[in-house]
Length: 457
Ligand SMILES: Cc1ncc(COP(=O)(O)O)c(C=O)c1O
Figure (cartoon, rainbow, N blue to C red):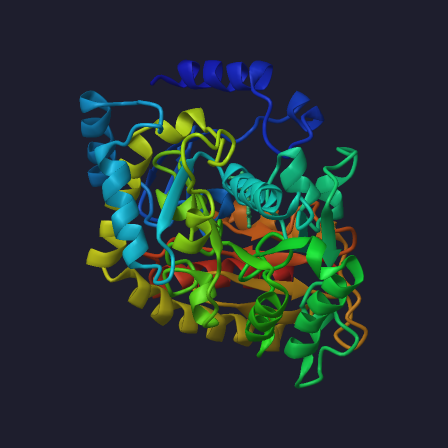
C-alpha cells in the first residue's frame, strides 16, 4: 500500500467505524490506531511503528501469538471444504475439537458451540433456568455472581457482572441475578486474616440462605477475576465454594473466558484449585483470535437432565447460535490446541510467570506507587496506590498516563478500564504464552521508565 492509501484507510475508519469502549471526540484531532500486521509477540500499526504486545491483542486473546500460518491454513482448508452448517448437524473439526478439549477437562463431557464469551455464559444461564423449569417449576432459577467479576456485554451478561461502570446506564437488568462480595484480600477489611479465603467464600452461603436455597440454581465465578483487577483467589476459597455448592445443590459455573486454554499455566484456571465445576465457559484464547469461537462445557449429569422421549416437546435445550455452526472456529481451535501442546507452552507459561512476578516484585521495591502485585501464569496485575499505608487508589488518569507512556516506548500494556469506580488503578499484563525473558525485560523496563516519568511520584 502507498502512504496515500494508508491515510484513506484512516479516514474511512474515522468516518465510519465505531470503536469499542472509546470516546470518539478526540478523533476529531487525532487518528485512531490501525493495526495492520503481527508476528509472534509484535504488531505493526499503519504508520509502520512496531509494538511489543503485552496484552495478547488488547484483551487476553492471541495466546499463541500472531502470524500462525498453520492456524490460518487449517481455517482456510476447512472453509473451502465446508464453511458452515447449522449446529443441529455435526461437522468434522467440531467433533474433533470437542473430543480433544474433553481430554483436558476430566469430569466434563459435553461441548456447546457459540461465538463470544458473553454468549457462552448466556448458554450457561439458560441451562440453569431451563433445568429449574424442568425440575421444580422454575423455583431454583437464581444465579449468583461476584462483585468485580465480568461475564460479558449483553444485557443479561451485564446483569451478572459486578462492575458498576460497565453496567451503568444499560439497565433495567435481567431479574434473578444476585451479587456476592469479591475475594480481593488487598481490598478487604479482614484481608490479612490467614482464614480470609474461607471467610470470603462463606459469603456465598450467607447469600444462598438469605435467598432460600430452593431458589438458587448456580453461582458463576471467574477462577481469577480479570478486568476487575486480576484477583487471585485466596487460600481455601474455591474449596469452600465447592463445599457450599454441593451442600445446597447449587451448580458451579466457572467462567474461563480469560483463564482458559493455558493462560494461568494449567489448561484451565479452576484446575489450580481442585474444584469440579458443572459448567465451564471459554472464548478468547480458544482459537487465539484466529476465529470467533466460544464454548460452553457441561457434565454428563447436567446433559442427561435434558434427555427425554421426543414426545416431551419442551424437554431439550432449545437454544441456537447461528454462527456456532461456523466450522472455521473449531478448525482454528484444534490447531491452536495442537500448538500449545506441541510447543509445550504451558511449561513456558510457568517458567516465564516466575520471572515476570520476580521482575514485578523488584519494580515494587523501587516504586512505592505499586501497592500490590498479583497474578498466576502470564496473567498479572500491579495495583497502584497514592500511599502504601492507606492504600488509597491512584486516579485512573495515572494508570492511563503509564499505559500511554509505555505505548510511546513501543510496548502495549493494559489497565483496568472504566470497570469499577475508584479502582481503575491496576496495570494488567497478559503477554502471549510464547513470550521470552527478553520480552519480559522490555515490558518491565518500559513500565519502570513510565513510573519514573510520572510527575510527583
Ligand atoms: C471473564 C470474561 N467473561 C466473559 C467475557 C465476555 O466475552 P466476549 O467479549 O467474548 O463476549 C469477558 C470479556 O472480556 C471476560 O473477561
